[in-house]
Structures are given as C-alpha cells and as structure tokens.
Length: 241
Ligand SMILES: O=C1O[C@H](COP(=O)(O)O)[C@@H](O)[C@H](O)[C@H]1O
Image (cartoon, rainbow, N blue to C red; front, side):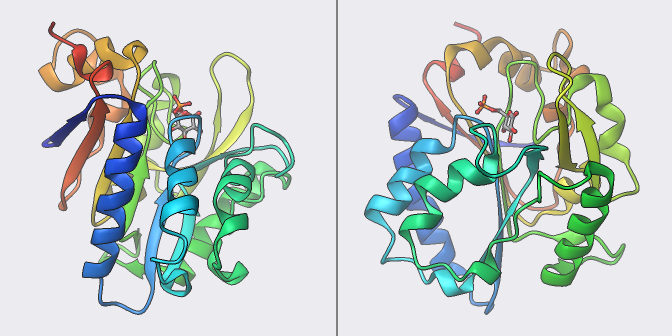
C-alpha cells in the first residue's frame, strides 16, 4: 500500500488536524453532492466533537451525504452503535438534512440490511465501470488486530467479495456487523485512516514495513487509485523506535 503518513502529537491533535483538512478538502469539491463514509469505534469521537463545536456553521451540510464503512448490528440507542455515537456527538448539533444521513439499520436482519445498504450506496454514489459506488472520501480506522471497517483477519475473504456490503462477525464477541467489502473500500476516490494509541504501533510497523504477519491484516490490503493517508499520533507512529 502506498500511503502518506501524517504524524501529530496526540489524539486531540490528530482530530483537530483532520477536521481542518476535511473542511479544506470539502471546499475543493465542486460537485453538488459529496459522499463521505465515516468510521466507527472510539477514534473518531473527538473528530465528531470538533466538527460540531468548531465547524458546524462552516460546512454546507446540505451537500454532504454521510455513510458508514461498518456498523454493529444493534439499535441506534445502543452505545455500541457507530451511527448512534455520531448522532449524539455530531449530527444532533449540525443542520444536516435527515435524507443525507445514510445509516446502516443495525436493528434490521443483517443479511437483508447488507443488501439494502449496498443498494442505497449505489443510489447515491457515483459508480465506477464495474458498477461499484465510488465514495468521494472514505474515513477508516484500524483495530489493534489490523481490522478495518469490520473486515477482521479471520474473514479476510471479505476483501474480495462480489457484494458491496456483507455480514461480518466480531472474532471475540461474535457480534454481527454489516461492513463495506474490500472492492467498495478500494473504489473510494480518497482514503484517510485515523489511527491513534500505542496499542496499534506494532501492527502499523508490520504493515508499513511489510514484515511479520502484515499480509494477514486487512488494513494492509486496502489499495486505491486515489490518495491514501494515515493520520497518526506519536504513540501509534512509535513503531521501529
Ligand atoms: O470495531 C471497529 O473498530 C475499528 C477501530 O476502532 P477503534 O475503537 O480502535 O477506533 C473502527 O474503525 C471500526 O469502524 C469499528 O466498527
């Protein structure tokens, strides 16, 4: 994977820098509808807070269509819900039209929802020559086991799936997830990873150095014709030290 690394002091500095870059990038987008996929988990929560507090009125939210790269199969009220967390920290504080928020319906049957969400993406995103949605911006995270979206090492075949979205299973809890598959992730026009914390450093070191178990980490295998950047804090970037 060819990726640019942007390193900041800590998680708040990563979130601040990314928020500023995101707002500047949005201003370069001239198309009427800008499709952005958010990541879940704990890393982007500060970003959501910063966007809500500092940039609520600086973004034309009517142009922004939000998607999620993965969702836990729980209702929005559940603290595990990626959409629910984003709603309380960001969406409830900005004037984004409800019709621009394309959440995975975590409380639906996972298999049916994976198909429905794929269709929703196709209806709102530009499609490539293979008929795959091309997100304008895909924001991803990485778990300590090298997973990204909800493509875990034990289900690495989801990187090659023919479907747009698929059902994944968390390796420890068995929780069902709906995740975008590899071909859709890799079709995005721009990919930005946000990865923070010392717990992620050794896996990042293997990924960037192509050493150890790097080929077993789904994050390693994300490719794009467009730019890929990793926003890291010093702790996550401490590999090789
Ligand atoms: O389960 C998930 O994990 C990854 C990483 O989460 P984090 O809590 O370590 O930030 C996340 O990117 C993914 O969207 C999420 O559902």
